[in-house]
Length: 397
Image 1: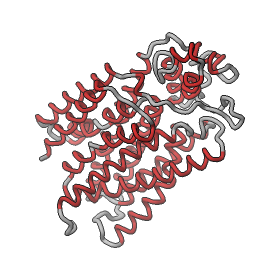
Image 2: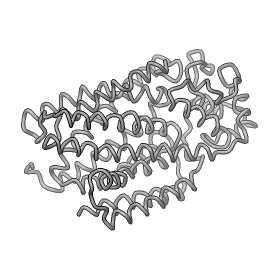
Image 3: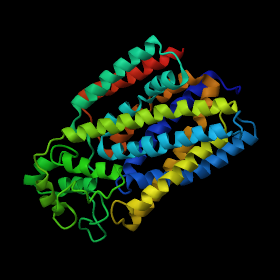
Image 4: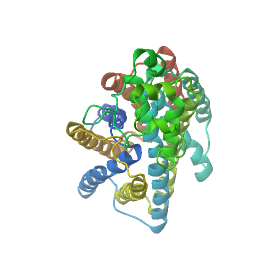
């Protein structure tokens, strides 16, 4: 424990929540250019380097209590945690960021502490307190409201996928990105039906493409989209080909992927606690092993997909992607390091409770940087969902 006042660490906690919130915003911006699986892999490299440097300095200088301890049992648990966190949770996270608005997906993904409580009961034999049960019910109600009130207008207008010659790019982008671009560039008579973002016009094609991506297949194959969508038709033809399809499939996929991400993030800490019990405490080695194994597991997936960028990028776009990735890596490192410090300074319960406010910063960042807009119904759904998380967290006080 340091000698800094309590309120100082509370402010730091809100700063960490803001760092994660803006990490989500920058990730969504980057996904306009980079494939979700590739971005997950690319992010590991600078994050591992920064984390290794900062964490080692903090350990060697005695700034925190984490050492470099490791056992074979802990190695196995961290390996399992890496599978759950990087292969399942984060891949779902990047996929859903491409499909859904931040005002919908971030409150749902913020329910991960509730999944932690449930998995702790199953795997660690912990008790499920009354407030946790109430929080589960309230958050579930919030997720139902978000699912029912999802508004197609809440999805920001992303720039159409174009190549260096100013025409729609072909061959590299996913079908979901191609169709979104079509909705934005179609003439008025077609755009009226297709410009709803991931709405009625583009829902089935967008979700079909993403489902193929999630399975590690080429979104252009597998029969998920008409052959006419694979490279030569104009945006107007592409948009008109998808008119009239229901948005229910997209809605189900957005909610499902967000819940999978939350469940994976919820299970990860439980498995990590099982690892720390075999060592006697958390260690820097565990943090670095998890990130490194995540990178190694993602490499063959990205290699098989043969896709890094969603389309041919211009030089200034490549520079923008590099800046976004480096900035996000710094924010991720800040979150990872200060999360452990805050638990030591103000306790796990208050830390989790404050960091649960990160969707607020993500939503504000989305409105500011991405042009997202939300109606009052989505605001109510988000508030109810986050209120459930807050109620459950209070169980530990």
